[in-house]
Image (cartoon, rainbow, N blue to C red; front, side, top):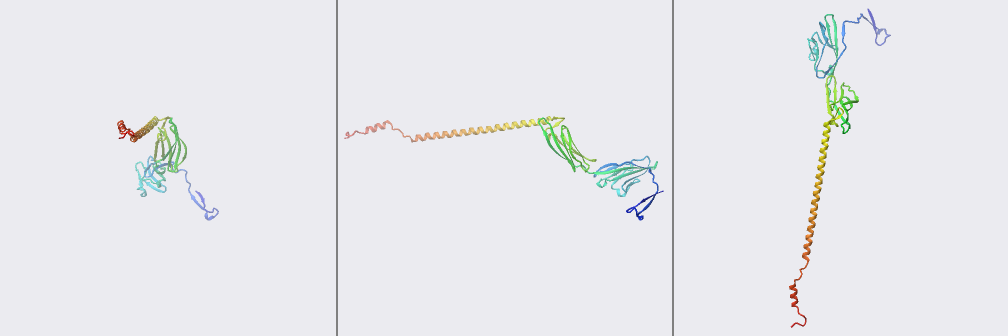
Length: 305
């Protein structure tokens, strides 16, 4: 028999000295407790927990805290709407998971052969669905040979990651770890940048082609499709500019020709008017018959009769 003494506020006070009598406790009681297993469930979904079944099952019990959920294949009235129990494999399925369901669950099975208790412990964590990532991509370097480096900022909830991508790979520059347990990965493959956010129950990915940011790149070589696109656009632009310049020159020439015609017509009108005016002012000369008649009618002085 062993005695243990404990005390509260004042160890020296006899009134506070309390003695307990305890029987010796063996170090092993035939109970085998397995290490706890982390389990993750999606909010609103369901999850099933299994128990290690002994050779000959004597009894089984599922517990959480001080609550007994299942005992001897019977579900507690408190959990009838919350769980399903499989009497064949003795698994416990928790339905319509809520944040309040994040707790420790223990499944204990008694082996009738040696009356040992085997306990499986689960640490359940209910997680939300990962929201869609937000990706901001900015071109850093772009040349006519098709090389392209870009900065990628991928953010999800309270976490973000900044990487530099180019040459088919991405190098992490800075990162703020998410407190909500969301893991962020930025990758670059086949000319596409991907931002992926994931936790233990869901994954969300968004992507953007490199050719939408700068010249597409694959295996360190410029994308032929992107080069052809740029050349075609350049040729079309040259044709447009040449056609526009030719049209403008033609319009200028037509205007000049019309202006010269108007000047010539004005000069002809002025010349014709001057000639007509001169013809009207000039007197007509006397003809010879009129002069001769006038001379005949005139007589010398002294010859009048």
